[in-house]
Each structure stands twice: as C-alpha cells, then as structure tokens.
Image (cartoon, rainbow, N blue to C red; front, side):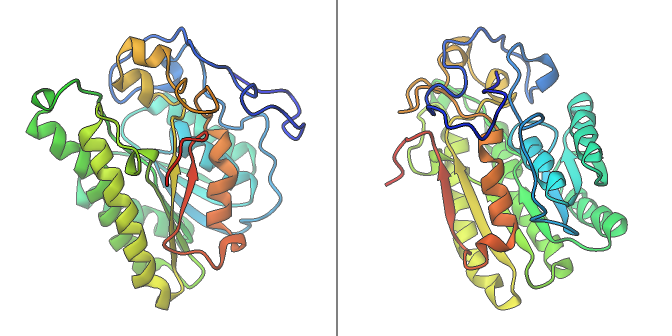
Length: 298
C-alpha cells in the first residue's frame, strides 16, 4: 500500500493510497505488522529529513509499528536518537530499529508492559543512561477492542484500556519531567474518537477524551518550565491494531466512511509529529492537531 515513488509530487489525496475494500486477515491482539497482508507505509522509502531534530533524544511508546514506527523513522532522519518502547512485538521492533540505525542514529529497544509504573520508570531511566538526556516523549502506545455492546466489555478489559492509554501516559510524563530541559516536548496521541466516539469503542474513546484534557492541562502546568505538551488526533490509520482488534467486515471497509474514502497511512502523520517535536511549534502547547481524513472535529 504505497503512494507514487515521488512523495513530493502533487496528488489527489483520495487516490494517494489504496481505498477499501481490503483483503486483510484478522489476527490476535496486539497485532504485528509482519503478519499483515497489506503493509502500512511508515515512510521507509519516502520520508526525507532536513535536520529539524539534530542532537535530540526521543522516547516513543508503541514505536514498533504504526504511527510510532513512522515517528521513529522521521525523528531519526531529522537527526534524533530514539528509544523504542513496545510490548512484545520483537520482529516489528527490530525492523523499526533497523531504519533508525540506517539513518545514522542510535536505536534502543525496550520491551515490556507500560501498564506497570515501574516499567515506565525503567524506560525513562534507560533513556537517561543511553542518551544522557530526554528531549522528546511521545506517548503513542494504545489498546482498543471493538465490542458490540457494553455487556461484552469486561471490567478487566476496561481497566487495561485505561492503564495502557491514560495511566501509562501519566507514569511516563511524571518520570520524564525531571530530565527534560526548557525546549523539550511531550506529544500524546489522542484520536478523532475524542470528538466523534465510536459506539464500538467505548473504553478506548473515553481514554482519548481523557488524553485530550490531560494534554491541555499539562501544557499549562509545564509552560513555566519551558516544556511544551501537545497531542495529535488521528482518524482511521492503517496499523496492526486494526486487524487485531476489529472484526473482519470492519477491517475490510476501514476508513471508507471518511471524506477521503480511505484510511490514512502512518507516514501521513510523520510531519505532524516532527513539527510538534521541533522548534517549528515553539508557540504551541496544550494544542491538538487533527489528522482525520476530513472527519469533522467541530
């Protein structure tokens, strides 16, 4: 699923990437890129850096695939070293590290469950030990599971969704803050579900609303320390999370209901994460950038 070989060529956005229906098999959670029939585009062959993040050191959760992988590749090509936090998707994580290293930057792989506060502290400490500093924290890892009714949602699943999507963000921000100097940035991944919640994703949508408010609040709290906090609200993006958490029919038609008539590719968010990590967004904090394929957020 790739666009034209020239990423700078002007293209019709509806036709830039494949549209549904997709012949994609479902898989078990958390999902792996290596098992997908239709591979996402993370910018492996298209993203070109221009030195926007030279010397920066970044932590990216969920950096093994999807949006996190696209951000890792872009950050590395802009000059940053990257710590890649992931659950257990070893093959995908090693592939992300390969692209970071091919860009001439250092990649550090840290597997483990960010639901555990001690593991979040260990991620931050590993970054300090490896890099000597933390300039960028991207809270991107997320859990979701599509359900037909509230009765299908167990208390354990509800708890896991909040622990992964909200608690971990709090744990990591709290642990990283003492190591972040003025000019550092935190980028959280919310969702179009914060504005237009899907009835199939009750716990997930609730966490994304929480992330939105957490970001707006923390941006105010950390402004006096010169640390900026912003978030990105993607619409439907083609990642391993989709075939791993949705039913076959939903996967087949994924993204069709947007004005763009297709899902976004992870690479289509790369420039936004780079913007929020760089000096180009120096007057932005507590903000949300929507990348929704045209789905309204107002």
